[in-house]
Amino acid sequence: MARGTLAAETVQAARRARYETIRGTVVHLLAGLSTGWLDLTKPANHQQIAVAVTRLRRYLVETDEVPDPLSHELQACADAAEREGIAVDLLAPAGVIPALPVDIRRALTEPIIEVLAATATRARITVVAFATEVVVAIIADAQLAAPIAATHDDVQVAQDTEGGLWVQSRWTGLSGSPS
Amino acid sequence: MGPVPVDRPVRVALVEDTDVVVEGVRTWIADDPAGRAVIVAVAGSIEAVLDGPGRDADVLVLDLELDGVMVTERVAALSDAGFRVVVFSVHVEPLIVEAVMNAGACAFLDKRTERDHFVDTIVAVAHDEPAVTPSMAGGLLQAVRLSPREREALRYLFQGMDHVSIARRLRKPSGETISAYTAKQYIERARAKFAAAGRPCRSTFALLARCIEEGLIRPEEVEDYRSGQNGP
Image (cartoon, rainbow over all chains, first blue to last red; front, side, top):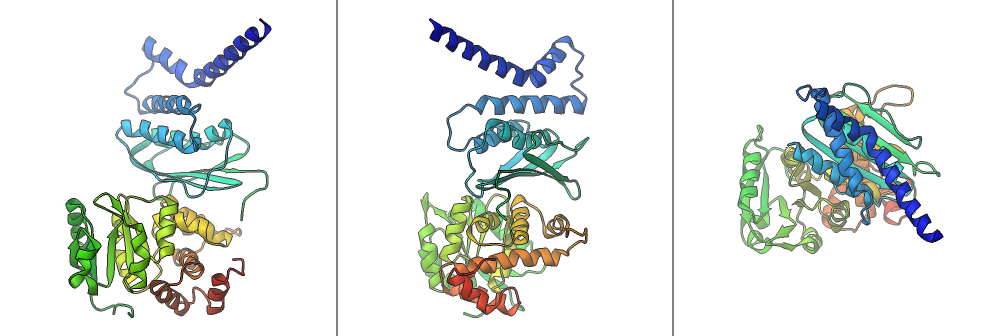
């Protein structure tokens, strides 16, 4: 019995964690849509929804059993953008991506999702990986209302708006950069 | 096989089995304002191209997948026979890029995204100059011992930046800018190191000779990379 209760509690905790994860983005947008206060003709709102939809798609594939979860999640983000009519060029990663916990992977892909939501027509996404460094970058014809902030202490975000938008998120492991 | 004189168009042979791609390549070459290249042969197989004027071409542009079969393992023999091979493919996985470059290919062009680099790359290769496309940068990054600046420059190239943007990102710690020319040199030096460390063949020797002339790499460094002795 005790074991059954424990399993049930674990399932419930996982469910709660999942709900917390999506609540921040999806739930309030759905509420806004259902009550009609969210004006879909405003580009900013449209972008917010694109971000939420892409996060949801990434979230859905986070638990898939695949050899390279980061590429898998980036593919989900790229697919979401392509459904919006954006030509996304997601390149095969240079180097072998080390195993990364989900919060790091989210922090790496989050800037990519934000840029894709603001992209007009095309984007190129790349990953360069070493044992203690993973760099995800996007170049797109996008305009950001505000700079993108990092969402994890171990992930830095850099951006440049001159000559098309470039945004890069970079994780470095304990032993630092390989250079 | 010396480099092609700069005052005559580069003769290109194209091994490609898809008509629409052939048409695309013809258009890119015809649209080059300086008329720097001409197509002398086109066929869907390596044999058919070499059995005619294609055998005297300056550059052999090779689709890696012909009639559904990968011809990756043919690159080494073609390079040894003295052809300057430029691989033109959708198979841009860095490991494949690295393998064909190591076999002796002079350059790699991503079929989907590098049409803007097509003529420039062909012309550079014909003149035995180091040509590095964004898709090549991904393969070079892992394969060579690079200085931090060379690695950074290659990474930005792979990400999709042009030389001007790379130079802006490579700003010195003092805040001083570097020129696009210097950024290009970091990239070309990485290419020279890759050639020095890789499989010896005719195309590689021609490229290294050119890089030594240009001062990108010193002869003794070539020896060091060949024997795998030195760091960057």
